[in-house]
Image 1 (cartoon, rainbow, N blue to C red):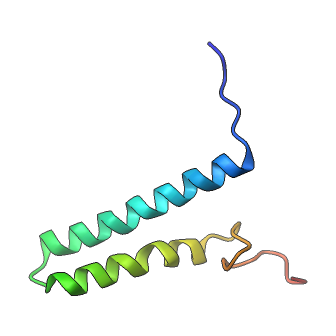
Image 2 (spheres, rainbow, N blue to C red; image 1 turned 120 degrees about the horizontal axis):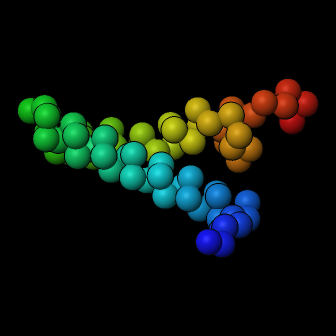
Length: 70
């Protein structure tokens, strides 16, 4: 069986896809489990993916950067 080698670009795309799934899951979960108006559930879901990216210390675009010199 051959191993698949992922480039950094592929890894970044996979992480982005997972963040989008997490945002959608939060929005769907909030809408299904609460009596919250749908527009508020969508708003919370829309904030979730960027918040996950911000919390990731490896994201240099606008995440919490580990290197203090940047």
